[in-house]
Image (cartoon, rainbow, N blue to C red; front, side, top):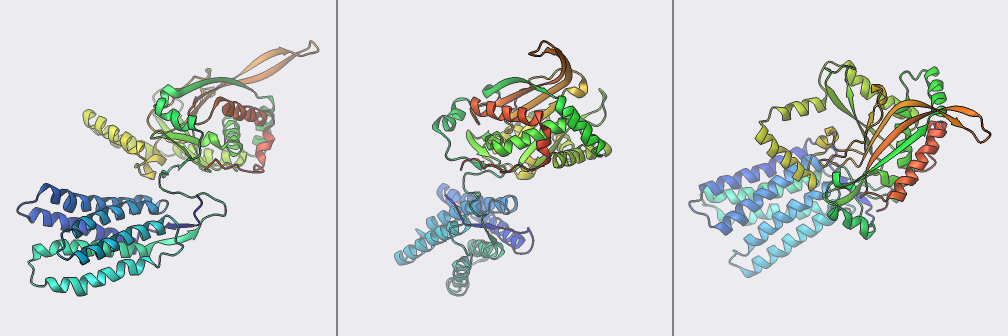
Length: 472
């Protein structure tokens, strides 16, 4: 299903902050009312206190974490709020009043949802939808309640704050047309990936059978003939690409393979398959100094499938140099240090909470950007250590679907067809893959394509002729 309009929040200032503040005040006021009530039945506590509070919290959470990319998720707390108001309407004395209010709440839920998911190309319909009921509430309904105690007024103030927050949001949101022929985010997508909804049944069911990445991994041992790569590297170093090496060629080849085979950029989360589309996140563990006492840290660099070898080299090398040249800890180091301060038993609970949040796609994007367990590929070089490559397991936490390790160069004397002896250079490269994202034929085709790029690395100097899009 293609949607033609995207709604988003351009900043977290002005009307956006006002909306969040009003919704927070709504929750605090309702909490104050509940505390002041002498006795609350279980049903009133659940549906008139906990339910609206949950809607308030969800609204503010989504506003700050998903306002730019997934504003459509704000329809969830709006529906929760409409359920709260609908339950409240059944306590009205007038049946006509109850029916009219139920129709209004249904209109609010449907019209707001249709707007934020992109079916309606203007948000102007939301302004009277929230503005007129707020004016009616202030100048008609609340005038009939003059003389009430301050405590009895608290629920009315909570409702007014809630309506005003929605009006502020409708004034703050902006819209832009979706790219022609492009697929945009909708319900079920994550902030780091788009859910694939047209996979074959075997791929849709397999994550429920093979539940973890560690038990779904396959091991591939391969080797690349790097004679052409050596010439390519020497040429680029002479051109001023200081530090350019085999690592950058392999990275550029893998990124180029993602342009032709976008299934490589999928991942499994919450037993569902997702695609990162044109966002390729590469993780690598590095040392600031090559010594046994030097601590490890992780860099994460983002690429596009259309990137050339020079773009890959410049961007990756910049990240590495920033880590090695600065004495300060990276953002990842600070996050790991903060977790290290948590006592062991409590840390276990925190990690469990993170795993649950990751399963349901609730982790904030800033956290998954820092996490070394989230990304398209984790790569490690054994060449700098002078040892053969290992088969590194996949992590059950996070969503990295492929782990690549390559070793040092080795020389092999081979016999040609005419009986002569030739010296060739090889690099062993091991892949550990999540078999649930694509089948073996797909992986084999992608690796064959990488072989072609390694044999003729000059192809990487130019952008690909086309970047294939993963299936919807």
